[in-house]
Length: 366
Ligand SMILES: NC(=O)c1ccc[n+]([C@@H]2O[C@H](COP(=O)([O-])OP(=O)(O)OC[C@H]3O[C@@H](n4cnc5c(N)ncnc54)[C@H](O)[C@@H]3O)[C@@H](O)[C@H]2O)c1
Figure 1 (cartoon, rainbow, N blue to C red):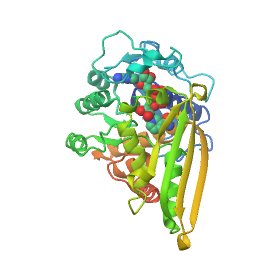
Figure 2 (spheres, rainbow, N blue to C red; figure 1 turned 45 degrees about the horizontal axis):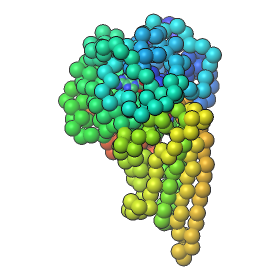
Figure 3 (cartoon, protein in one colour; figure 1 turned 90 degrees about the vertical axis):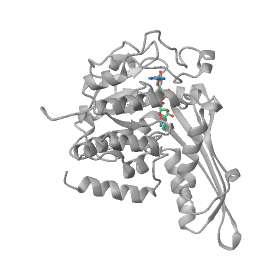
Figure 4 (cartoon, rainbow, N blue to C red; figure 1 turned 60 degrees about the vertical axis):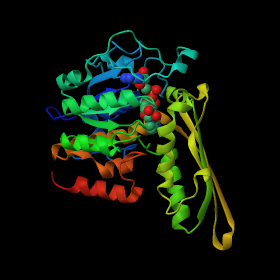
């Protein structure tokens, strides 16, 4: 970062594995001044490099994280993501107690401490007040799947404080027209919902489905089975928390088909929690179709990724795009960046079209 340069000030709700990877990634690129941009979609976006993003406030509810400086909290249990660098710069930001609401599933108590959430006893802070006093411009929401009330509470705090929301969680806020209208009326840009990783199961499945369609091969059936061993996967063992995640993941793929493959023929979702996998997510994907003369074609793929750095590689772009939109006075749900980077955007677009619109936006003078 060049001295005196303005930085993008963000707040984080949920200091879990994704937040840890984002912070470690920012540090990684800061140490190499961005390096040659390897691992990034954009080294510079609107003149901002990854290291220009600064966390000024953080919220969590786990007793091993609340009250800790951010650079320590990101390594606290039950976080288990791969270490990108050795240490982080000391952060003056202390993790503050957020409103718990439905953030912590009851079944967490049945699992060992090092694998599951443990709620702190502190009373929650006033999130809107903290956001306003911290100078944050953007709140990145990284709460567990199924946190409908908690994510809504953070979204309300954004509206009350004029802070943009980047919603990485499959709770439909930015893609909900009612919420979208409220952000537009308040003059606040937002992007969401449910982050689509850099090279994850969703983008791979979308691209392969698109390939079948583009080559005239009709898809008859498909599945995407995912296993992982982080708290995201542990949380998703609760099937009642999964409703919007299933919708989000399924629509991300079916939106690429110009026909209805039939609900019973598409099975997409988190499939099991395997503790020893930790942050390693494995996706098993199968597509069955028929081509020329009705002759069958089958495709099987296995993708193995580190889940959290994979999402951070996209979030680093969303943050910079939202900051640029704020500078340009654009309000409400940001459509191309949401379509490109989120599984459940307000408007689905083919990825190349969303990418084209993003580049067009970046090329415009502010
Ligand atoms: N590649 C990816 O990892 C990926 C991709 C798409 C979506 N997501 C979504 O991003 C979200 C975050 O993923 P993660 O792997 O970091 O999860 P995580 O389980 O590691 O972290 C969640 C954090 O939220 C905290 N929390 C729970 N309730 C809270 C509340 N009310 N207020 C503040 N903090 C609270 C927990 O203590 C924990 O620190 C999940 O919803 C996940 O599904 C992740």
